Every structure is written in structure tokens, then in C-alpha cells.
Image 1 (cartoon, one colour):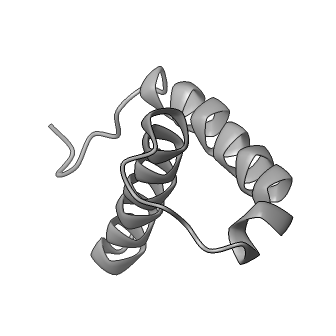
Image 2 (cartoon, one colour):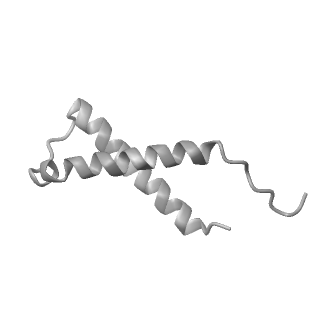
Length: 67
């Protein structure tokens, strides 16, 4: 069973990387030069999260309560 805090951590991670990728495309906010150095790692982690989220979407839901 997944704890609620662990689930919310993943949701926050998805939101942060999603906002970063949207900002990278449309340039809403000017980011510091530090992010230019770690840009390739951010894309790598974001890609892994997207792939993992796709697999989790098609996973069979657990039955809780034995019904």
C-alpha cells in the first residue's frame, strides 16, 4: 500500500517537471544560468517520469477492502 505522503511527493515532482518543460518551451519566466548547466539532466529525469507515469496509467487498480 502506498502512503499518502509518498503519492503526494510524486504528484509534486510531476508538477514541477511539467511546469519546467512548459516554461522551457514558451519562456514565461527567465531562469538563472544554473539551470542551463543541468538542463540535460532535467530533461532526462522528466522523460523517465513521463514513461513511468504512462506505465502506471495502464496498471490494474488495486482492490481495497476485498470486494
